[in-house]
Length: 271
Ligand SMILES: NC(=O)c1ccc[n+]([C@@H]2O[C@H](COP(=O)([O-])OP(=O)(O)OC[C@H]3O[C@@H](n4cnc5c(N)ncnc54)[C@H](OP(=O)(O)O)[C@@H]3O)[C@@H](O)[C@H]2O)c1
Image (cartoon, rainbow, N blue to C red; front, side, top):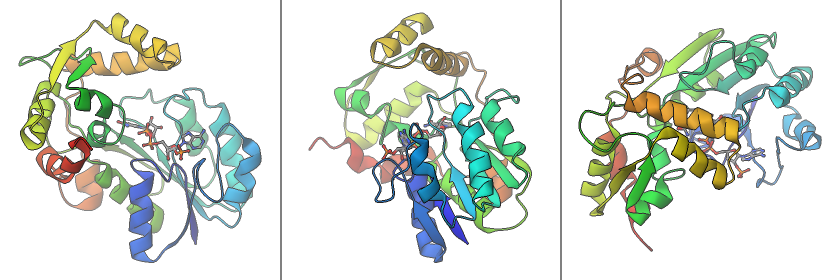
């Protein structure tokens, strides 16, 4: 068994690789920057990455809402000998999403993971520059009374992915995954502030302004709108529910945000 891990330098892929390594399972870790490169926008890189693979941890690009690449990649993977696919999707995505459909219709064992927003967005990615700058500009409100969200630790997603990739009993299942407690963005930045000693304020903006900011920053407008809608859904209290995927697969409630903040504290130290 060789597991092809896409997005292997990313927040979940990196952790999937570490766990497979610890388990002694054979894997091939790929992204645009690896020795064997894999680039979604260059299909000529796919065959080499797939050579000998029997399972895939499939991490699509967040901004690629259209399913064209997956619709091309999945049959190629199956033809190359892949018998199991674990797709990283997202909670709240419409059930007729083309990327999920491509995996469900692959003809091989599949598992779909639908996580909430990751805690690690605050320390490894999207929100980190703003946290370091002391001001985070989002359409999420800026105080008590705003909606909360059960941010999930990337390690919990990776642990569920590794279970689905290496154990039986997960085929044909879609897991909704969340952290064990819902927090508002104000609570999140307060906790990061406590651990890091930083003063961080949230500047609330209307969704349309936020979409415009993202587009100005180079993000495609359809994806910018999805992000704004997702954040305003949190603000309005529509995305606070806990999901049961982590307890049902891992047998625990998921890592607490407070523990994540302690582990990630080094990310908020200015070099
Ligand atoms: N972040 C969240 O809160 C969240 C929540 C729910 C669902 N998701 C889903 O999780 C998936 C991962 O999203 P993420 O934004 O959090 O990113 P991530 O997995 O942390 O990082 C993206 C990964 O993709 C690789 N990559 C970037 N461009 C690539 C390309 N053209 N071809 C091949 N690989 C490429 C990157 O590596 P290189 O730069 O080395 O190529 C990196 O390993 C997305 O589908 C997203 O919708 C994310």
